[in-house]
Length: 209
Image 1 (cartoon, rainbow, N blue to C red):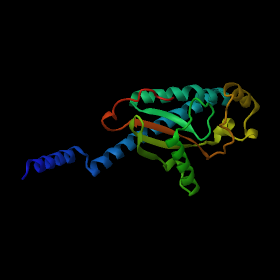
Image 2: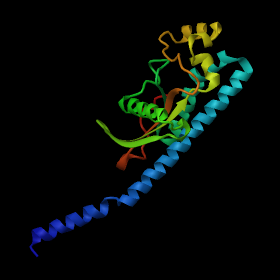
Image 3: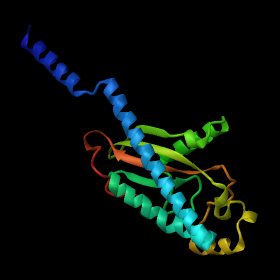
Image 4: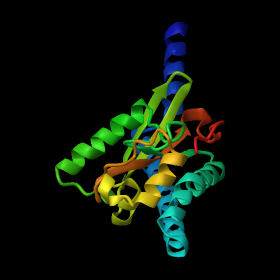
């Protein structure tokens, strides 16, 4: 066999050995989604429990503090613990500096809305994908958040939001667009982002709370 051909075959065999098998790739993706789902569920559970405690203690105005202060703290802590970027994004945002979905997140939110229109319940939905971006490849994951009945006091129609809460919201969020929702509607999603490939275990430098 000519040397050049033998060398070519050797290179191809090495590449084949280095490339993960389809089964291994599927297993890796399944494990990532499992972990991401647990992180998202844990985030929503902790946030929900905090919301209940604060509303019981001080009423709906205390719940505003949970969304404004505690939610970013929880997201930041989970991001540091996991080495992932964990955050919330909204279909309409209260603070333009936080929670604004990027292009991939907007696409996922639109997909969630379409699936809901076809009868699929939000609790069963997730969306995950390996995405190529200018600075590398990332594993992206989202789990939708439906507006809970008690949340209409801050995010519902204008006649559902008490005057006291409207005053606080107007003062704290002058560019607030996160109202006009009905209970059960898509409010947003938990969004998780992790570097993929050789760098997938490195934490993302700036976690968006």
